[in-house]
Image (cartoon, rainbow, N blue to C red; front, side, top):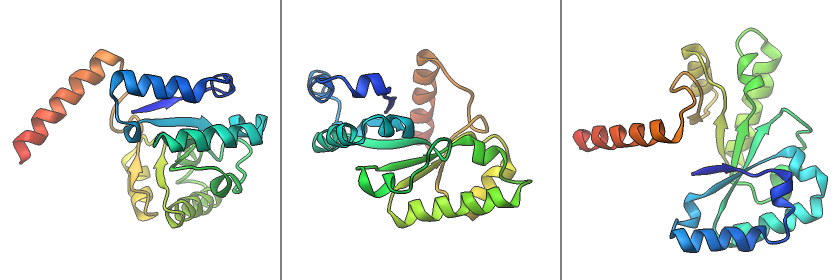
Length: 171
């Protein structure tokens, strides 16, 4: 389960304790929770953000750097912070096919993420041509309207039940 965390939430003095308590009370496995943070969140107070993220990692929570490439995109973040997942901003995906320089940048972001052993996710995939190109670039995880529109909680629950039934039929 992925949850977006705002700069305001991350700056709360009890954020780590609050998440630990929620995980304990819900009995949700910490390693199944991924907190999505944006690069702008990291630059507000690098030292404090780093301390909080390392405390969250001690809980076994996963950390995703969301919208990578959209903002300041310091490559230093990839080694300085305990990042598990790199989510490439959809702007790279949207401009991928017609603009060769975008393809070069995108291909190398994916390669870098893979070499750093991060989960690399391409956001905003809307066409089969984009999917084919991303597979060619060795991007193993994609998300976007090509697969599903945004869903509310009820629709998501229904989809999960259907996929569970389908996966049982395949076994």
